[in-house]
Length: 462
Ligand code: BGP
Image 1 (cartoon, protein in one colour):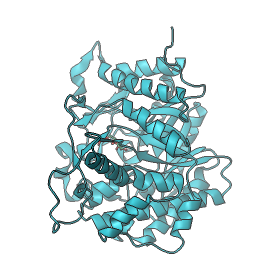
Image 2: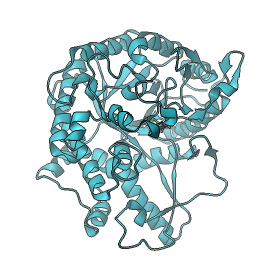
Image 3: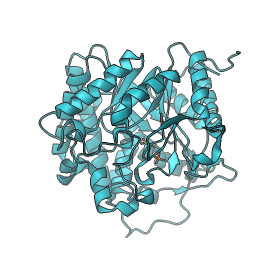
């Protein structure tokens, strides 16, 4: 078979998941409650078809089977997250030994099957008790997180070589404190800025703890969802709008975690509008001294931006949208199920930006994927024929390949996700997996893309 797009030796082929979305057993094994358990208990109707985080793919009970499936399709790497409220119920204090045993078993099972575990410490899942103390608005929670990270490093650090502090830290800021799609459903930009800032401090503290321990050459990183910002035109007002959107949604985490500093223009905007978060002496140095080794990039869609057509009402509460409007580019390609634009070249633009402006930091695509509704429609010969997903992945891999050829330091590609799973408010609406999962029986069935990725991993290209 001739391989047109060949990837570098040792390229990481795999997929990404998160604890809340795949484990299930939300009230088993001594797990404490997190904000998803609570929100579902309070407002079940906000979740698609009323399905909550108790109903997932059942990885807690089926991880051995899943590791075999990963192996069958050629994964050499796999991302999971640790559930903080499972490992340390309540968020502080004693480790739950049942949870430690569970994660030990999963990690050992992966390694025994030549799949390198990538372990993420936080994927949107604040323990409820800590949320009740103020969540990321509280400085004490930042310290609790650093203690939790220390426990995890000590428990699993002898075997895990790739660690991540956070997945998409901007999402809880947007969802929980700006746009009402995560608990605690606050809409307040100043509080959002505090949450974002404290998350960054928590991240830097965890990196500091990591570097104080003997981690046997392991790397530590962060996973950011980068949405390249494209202006409607090259006129100065559109360019400025696009630059500001980029500051808020990409550079607010990218710059401090990779370069050790917030962009001055972002600080100036927040200061001018009285939105700066509360800081403590020493924070700047902490962030500066604890930049990451490795960057995970989640890429789904770009952001298209134009200058505001009308000035914001000066009496309305401050929002990032004071500075830009979204723009629907005519003719853009869409994933109509998720309502997200598909723009494969975005992956190349991100990688070139990292190369040129972020010291060519070692990176990988830590999530990319296509959520589709009612995939059973596409069953033929007993298999979901998800050619659209194969095309989607190929399109992105081609641009990733080009970036690597031009010197980008990209080491791998993880699909979101290994199997269909519970996707927050959308629950089971959009399916993302290489494997479909029957919600009732938990039976896994490979889609056509599973067979395809096996070939790709074996050939290290396509
Ligand atoms: C990312 C998250 C994942 C996953 C994915 C798909 O933002 O890290 O947890 O859910 O998006 O998005 P959604 O589930 O909203 O369709």
